[in-house]
Length: 113
Length: 112
Image (cartoon, rainbow over all chains, first blue to last red; front, side, top):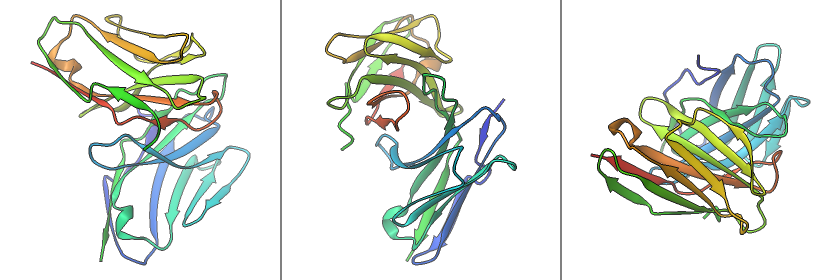
């Protein structure tokens, strides 16, 4: 039972355009969501997070949107840069004194010059 | 560099053997997490420690155990290794349990 799903295994975007990565979840108890970026041979790098009391969080070129009714979140990267090429993981957790992150399968983003 | 240090980076061992993976969290972080990333399973939460105490458990096999020491470093012990245990094992740390976790570079375990 996959509680966090990233249905697009890969995405290709032209440099300078907007990249939109999507994530769906099934567990309505999740109240904290994160995006991580991963380069080959490295650990996941934290990008941005959002709690369930918000519907948007912005940090520079990265914005995360949360639609609780649809159980959907998305990561927008504007403008996309070649260094953004990586695998992006969506993760979710239930805040209950612990942080057991449940990860999606990842989306490989390729930024084309 | 996330500040989380994992050793060794690579480990090759035979089935039935036992290995220990080590993690040093970021300075000041009290919480340590272990994750397993295998080809077909993605990143799976194994276990979390907070200030020396086990806080949460995920899909961790009975053959696996972990602990967090007084200096806050953590070790993951894997015993009676099977071919299916081959994976990347990541350690992550956070200041407490409601802030984002920072990951180490991982230990690639290959069981032959």
